[in-house]
Amino acid sequence: MKSQERHQLKQNEFAHTAARVAGAIQENRQRVGLIAIVVVAIIAIGGGYWYWQRRTNNLAGGEFGIGMAISRAQITPPSSLPSAVQATGTFASEAARHEAALKQFEKAATDYPSTAAGIAARYHAGLEQLALGKFADAEKSFQQVIDRGAGIYPPSARLALAETLAQQGKYDDAIKRLTDLAGDRDGALPVDGILMQLARTSAKAGKRQDAKAAYKRVVDEFPDSFYANDARQQLTVLN
Image 1 (cartoon, helix red, strand yellow):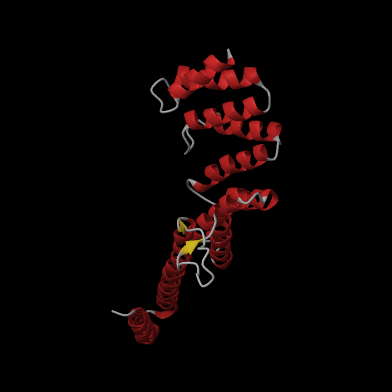
Image 2: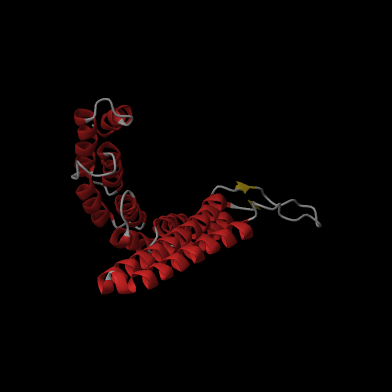
Protein backbone atom coordinates (compact mmCIF):
# COMPACT_ATOMS: atom_id res chain seq x y z
CA MET A 1 0.00 0.00 0.00
CA LYS A 2 1.39 3.42 -0.94
CA SER A 3 2.21 5.85 1.84
CA GLN A 4 -0.38 8.32 0.54
CA GLU A 5 -3.05 5.62 0.65
CA ARG A 6 -2.04 4.61 4.19
CA HIS A 7 -2.22 8.24 5.29
CA GLN A 8 -5.67 8.60 3.69
CA LEU A 9 -6.84 5.43 5.43
CA LYS A 10 -5.71 6.76 8.81
CA GLN A 11 -7.55 10.03 8.13
CA ASN A 12 -10.71 8.12 7.20
CA GLU A 13 -10.49 5.99 10.36
CA PHE A 14 -10.12 9.08 12.49
CA ALA A 15 -13.01 10.79 10.69
CA HIS A 16 -15.27 7.78 11.29
CA THR A 17 -14.32 7.75 14.97
CA ALA A 18 -15.11 11.44 15.29
CA ALA A 19 -18.49 10.88 13.61
CA ARG A 20 -19.34 8.04 16.00
CA VAL A 21 -18.42 10.22 18.98
CA ALA A 22 -20.58 13.06 17.68
CA GLY A 23 -23.48 10.65 17.25
CA ALA A 24 -23.01 9.35 20.77
CA ILE A 25 -23.13 12.87 22.12
CA GLN A 26 -26.46 13.52 20.39
CA GLU A 27 -27.97 10.21 21.53
CA ASN A 28 -26.93 10.70 25.15
CA ARG A 29 -27.76 14.38 25.48
CA GLN A 30 -31.24 13.81 26.89
CA ARG A 31 -30.74 10.37 28.43
CA VAL A 32 -27.66 10.80 30.57
CA GLY A 33 -27.10 14.51 30.62
CA LEU A 34 -24.06 16.70 30.86
CA ILE A 35 -21.71 14.25 32.62
CA ALA A 36 -21.97 11.68 29.85
CA ILE A 37 -21.41 14.35 27.23
CA VAL A 38 -18.25 15.48 28.98
CA VAL A 39 -16.99 11.90 29.22
CA VAL A 40 -17.60 11.27 25.54
CA ALA A 41 -15.93 14.55 24.65
CA ILE A 42 -12.87 13.57 26.69
CA ILE A 43 -12.69 10.28 24.81
CA ALA A 44 -12.85 12.19 21.53
CA ILE A 45 -10.07 14.52 22.57
CA GLY A 46 -7.98 11.60 23.80
CA GLY A 47 -8.42 9.76 20.51
CA GLY A 48 -7.40 12.82 18.54
CA TYR A 49 -4.37 13.38 20.74
CA TRP A 50 -3.35 9.72 20.41
CA TYR A 51 -3.59 9.94 16.63
CA TRP A 52 -1.60 13.17 16.53
CA GLN A 53 1.02 11.86 18.95
CA ARG A 54 1.52 8.61 17.03
CA ARG A 55 1.86 10.48 13.75
CA THR A 56 4.32 12.97 15.29
CA ASN A 57 6.43 10.17 16.77
CA ASN A 58 6.50 8.38 13.43
CA LEU A 59 7.62 11.52 11.62
CA ALA A 60 10.25 12.26 14.27
CA GLY A 61 11.56 8.71 14.08
CA GLY A 62 11.84 8.99 10.31
CA GLU A 63 13.83 12.22 10.51
CA PHE A 64 16.12 10.73 13.15
CA GLY A 65 16.59 7.60 11.05
CA ILE A 66 17.75 9.69 8.11
CA GLY A 67 20.34 11.32 10.34
CA MET A 68 21.61 7.95 11.54
CA ALA A 69 21.89 6.72 7.95
CA ILE A 70 23.91 9.79 7.00
CA SER A 71 26.20 9.41 10.02
CA ARG A 72 27.05 5.87 8.89
CA ALA A 73 27.36 6.60 5.17
CA GLN A 74 30.44 5.50 3.27
CA ILE A 75 33.43 7.80 2.83
CA THR A 76 34.48 7.83 -0.83
CA PRO A 77 37.22 10.31 -1.79
CA PRO A 78 36.35 12.10 -5.03
CA SER A 79 37.81 10.88 -8.29
CA SER A 80 40.51 12.92 -9.98
CA LEU A 81 38.65 12.72 -13.29
CA PRO A 82 37.26 16.13 -14.37
CA SER A 83 33.77 14.77 -15.06
CA ALA A 84 33.51 12.67 -11.88
CA VAL A 85 30.72 13.37 -9.39
CA GLN A 86 30.30 12.22 -5.80
CA ALA A 87 28.38 8.95 -5.62
CA THR A 88 24.91 9.29 -4.15
CA GLY A 89 24.79 8.43 -0.47
CA THR A 90 28.55 8.84 0.03
CA PHE A 91 30.74 11.68 1.28
CA ALA A 92 34.16 12.89 0.22
CA SER A 93 35.44 13.23 3.79
CA GLU A 94 34.52 12.56 7.40
CA ALA A 95 34.08 16.28 7.96
CA ALA A 96 31.55 16.47 5.13
CA ARG A 97 29.66 13.52 6.59
CA HIS A 98 29.68 15.06 10.08
CA GLU A 99 28.30 18.33 8.70
CA ALA A 100 25.53 16.59 6.77
CA ALA A 101 24.55 14.41 9.72
CA LEU A 102 24.59 17.40 12.05
CA LYS A 103 22.24 19.31 9.76
CA GLN A 104 19.77 16.42 9.70
CA PHE A 105 19.93 15.76 13.44
CA GLU A 106 19.40 19.44 14.20
CA LYS A 107 16.37 19.47 11.91
CA ALA A 108 14.84 16.47 13.69
CA ALA A 109 15.61 17.92 17.12
CA THR A 110 14.18 21.33 16.22
CA ASP A 111 11.05 20.04 14.52
CA TYR A 112 10.21 17.44 17.19
CA PRO A 113 11.95 18.61 20.40
CA SER A 114 9.69 16.80 22.89
CA THR A 115 9.65 13.38 21.25
CA ALA A 116 12.00 10.54 22.14
CA ALA A 117 13.44 10.65 18.63
CA GLY A 118 13.90 14.42 18.86
CA ILE A 119 15.84 14.10 22.12
CA ALA A 120 17.94 11.32 20.60
CA ALA A 121 18.59 13.57 17.60
CA ARG A 122 19.75 16.39 19.90
CA TYR A 123 22.19 14.00 21.60
CA HIS A 124 23.60 12.83 18.27
CA ALA A 125 23.82 16.42 17.07
CA GLY A 126 26.05 17.03 20.08
CA LEU A 127 28.26 14.09 19.09
CA GLU A 128 28.61 15.50 15.57
CA GLN A 129 29.45 18.94 16.96
CA LEU A 130 32.05 17.37 19.22
CA ALA A 131 33.60 15.54 16.26
CA LEU A 132 33.75 18.82 14.35
CA GLY A 133 35.37 20.66 17.25
CA LYS A 134 32.31 22.85 17.81
CA PHE A 135 32.69 22.58 21.55
CA ALA A 136 30.40 25.40 22.67
CA ASP A 137 27.57 24.07 20.50
CA ALA A 138 28.19 20.52 21.73
CA GLU A 139 27.99 21.67 25.36
CA LYS A 140 24.61 23.32 24.68
CA SER A 141 23.25 20.25 22.92
CA PHE A 142 24.29 17.87 25.67
CA GLN A 143 22.93 20.17 28.36
CA GLN A 144 19.57 20.31 26.58
CA VAL A 145 19.42 16.51 26.62
CA ILE A 146 20.32 16.45 30.31
CA ASP A 147 17.57 18.98 31.08
CA ARG A 148 14.81 17.54 28.88
CA GLY A 149 15.56 13.90 28.22
CA ALA A 150 14.67 10.61 29.87
CA GLY A 151 16.08 7.10 29.98
CA ILE A 152 19.60 6.46 28.75
CA TYR A 153 20.18 9.78 27.03
CA PRO A 154 20.65 12.16 30.01
CA PRO A 155 23.45 10.09 31.62
CA SER A 156 24.99 9.51 28.18
CA ALA A 157 24.88 13.26 27.59
CA ARG A 158 26.55 13.86 30.98
CA LEU A 159 29.37 11.53 29.95
CA ALA A 160 29.68 13.19 26.55
CA LEU A 161 29.66 16.62 28.16
CA ALA A 162 32.56 15.59 30.40
CA GLU A 163 34.48 14.47 27.30
CA THR A 164 33.69 17.78 25.60
CA LEU A 165 35.12 19.67 28.56
CA ALA A 166 38.20 17.44 28.68
CA GLN A 167 38.93 18.02 25.00
CA GLN A 168 38.99 21.75 25.73
CA GLY A 169 41.44 21.25 28.58
CA LYS A 170 38.80 21.95 31.23
CA TYR A 171 39.97 18.97 33.21
CA ASP A 172 38.79 19.94 36.69
CA ASP A 173 35.21 20.38 35.54
CA ALA A 174 35.35 17.18 33.48
CA ILE A 175 36.79 15.19 36.39
CA LYS A 176 34.11 16.47 38.76
CA ARG A 177 31.36 15.40 36.37
CA LEU A 178 32.92 11.98 35.84
CA THR A 179 33.37 11.51 39.57
CA ASP A 180 29.69 12.27 40.13
CA LEU A 181 28.71 9.80 37.40
CA ALA A 182 30.97 7.10 38.83
CA GLY A 183 29.31 7.54 42.22
CA ASP A 184 25.90 6.60 40.82
CA ARG A 185 25.98 2.83 41.31
CA ASP A 186 22.37 2.48 40.21
CA GLY A 187 22.75 4.60 37.09
CA ALA A 188 22.11 3.52 33.52
CA LEU A 189 25.79 3.61 32.52
CA PRO A 190 28.37 0.97 33.57
CA VAL A 191 30.47 2.32 36.42
CA ASP A 192 33.62 0.50 35.25
CA GLY A 193 33.49 2.30 31.91
CA ILE A 194 33.03 5.66 33.63
CA LEU A 195 35.98 4.93 35.93
CA MET A 196 38.18 4.21 32.92
CA GLN A 197 37.19 7.55 31.41
CA LEU A 198 37.85 9.23 34.76
CA ALA A 199 41.28 7.61 34.97
CA ARG A 200 42.26 8.66 31.44
CA THR A 201 41.07 12.21 32.00
CA SER A 202 42.94 12.43 35.31
CA ALA A 203 46.11 11.18 33.59
CA LYS A 204 45.77 13.83 30.88
CA ALA A 205 45.37 16.44 33.60
CA GLY A 206 48.64 15.26 35.17
CA LYS A 207 46.88 13.86 38.23
CA ARG A 208 48.68 10.51 38.37
CA GLN A 209 47.49 9.52 41.82
CA ASP A 210 43.87 10.17 40.92
CA ALA A 211 44.31 8.19 37.70
CA LYS A 212 45.85 5.28 39.64
CA ALA A 213 43.00 5.35 42.14
CA ALA A 214 40.41 5.14 39.36
CA TYR A 215 42.22 2.30 37.58
CA LYS A 216 42.57 0.46 40.90
CA ARG A 217 38.85 0.72 41.51
CA VAL A 218 38.23 -0.99 38.17
CA VAL A 219 40.62 -3.83 39.09
CA ASP A 220 39.34 -4.23 42.65
CA GLU A 221 35.61 -3.68 42.17
CA PHE A 222 35.18 -5.10 38.65
CA PRO A 223 37.78 -7.87 38.26
CA ASP A 224 35.80 -9.54 35.48
CA SER A 225 35.19 -6.32 33.60
CA PHE A 226 35.99 -5.88 29.93
CA TYR A 227 38.25 -3.02 31.07
CA ALA A 228 40.07 -4.89 33.85
CA ASN A 229 43.13 -5.98 31.83
CA ASP A 230 43.60 -2.52 30.39
CA ALA A 231 43.31 -1.02 33.87
CA ARG A 232 46.00 -3.41 35.19
CA GLN A 233 48.33 -2.47 32.33
CA GLN A 234 47.81 1.24 32.96
CA LEU A 235 48.53 0.75 36.67
CA THR A 236 51.83 -0.91 35.76
CA VAL A 237 52.72 2.06 33.56
CA LEU A 238 51.85 4.60 36.26
CA ASN A 239 53.65 2.77 39.11
